[in-house]
Image 1 (cartoon, rainbow, N blue to C red):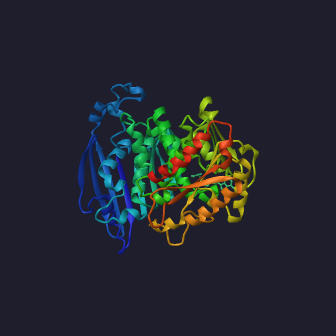
Image 2: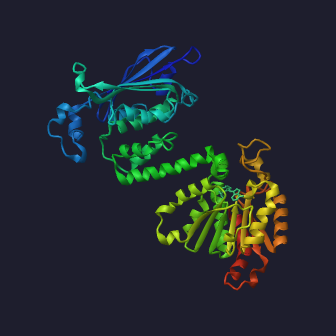
Image 3: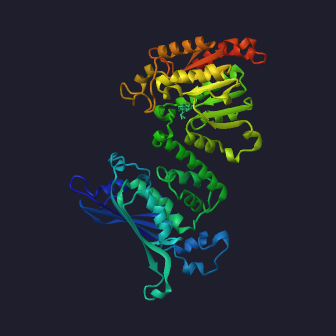
Length: 506
Ligand code: SAH
């Protein structure tokens, strides 16, 4: 089993940096024993211009057969023949992938202590595997490597026997990949895709295989059009594990799409991005503060206005107290992602009767929104142009008129505390404005006075003595609540007393 990785270079960026990246000295040949044989690493060429590292795995076929590799699918032994016709000794199969991960562990992880900047740099790479078993042939090789950013993917079918071309092709190909790529990315692709092409995983599949797949797939697998086939084959067609992997990849994809598809979404998931380093993401604290306030208000039927991708709706569904949850958003795409997150289609009847996602604009009054206990506007108002804000105000406080309205919005004063935020910048490209505490309070008091509500303010996140909390929340309670005939009137009093405490705790 044989694989070479080559790179080119210049006197300033010598090709022999490959030795640093692989943690293997270009001047030495080294051998490592692996569970299936011996792995050798050596450099057929090593100059500043060109450097090639070769990984050769010498498999011990007898040990393999003893370990059960000679068994066919389903565990039935392929009779004694297996020992003689086994292709493992020379074909670059899943065994090579295992050797690769053992011998180049740090390179796979993108670590290089001696030259920490190197793994981050893409460089011209050429990978060649002379004999690669490919169930699915050259066509599948292209489908798998094609979307991964290589300039060249060449898969040449190998004849069964060159002397007898009429016998046709074998199930092996010669693979060449060329392109500008980070070495770790290339290695991680190979680590996953070699066994996928081989399609005869040689060890038992345990649940931690899903973790391995996701780790090695980081940055490329979630968005790969063939991630279903890749996961299924990698996990030896184990249905439960494959389902699990695909679900988790979908979440990864959604998280990635928060960044890249933000404009298309007309959406802003402030979310964890601006707070990555913090122990509890601000988005989580915000959700907790909202849930506490809703609980305090004794709400049962709740509107999530500008629900985005449905994180809050999902949290509300988990609490049986909420009998009716309606997510509203103007963006169909956000609603589509929310439906996926909630698995609306696969939801049982009892759950699905509690939740609805509807498209609508908060800039217009909407009869469907009348008669609810509470409405949440979490990180929504700052997405409207200021002149549109009175329309939203009327639609929510004038027309829908729920007993409780929760409004959260960034506190712009806190922006100086974000280390990664350049001075004078808003937290998200789609924020039309961000308010100081005073500006938010002034707006909130006006709104409350105009529509017959009282309002209290709750800090969310670390309440900085100088600049206040990162998120500010207004808890609006309709003033005529006490005349409501329903039982929740007493609960509303509890809101006033309870919520500030919750806020302080957050
Ligand atoms: N509430 C979510 C999402 C906030 S992002 C959270 O806290 O994470 C703002 C959301 O408001 C986006 O999904 C956007 O599509 C939606 N939105 C913006 N303008 C809107 C409008 N006029 N009507 C309805 N939704 C709107």
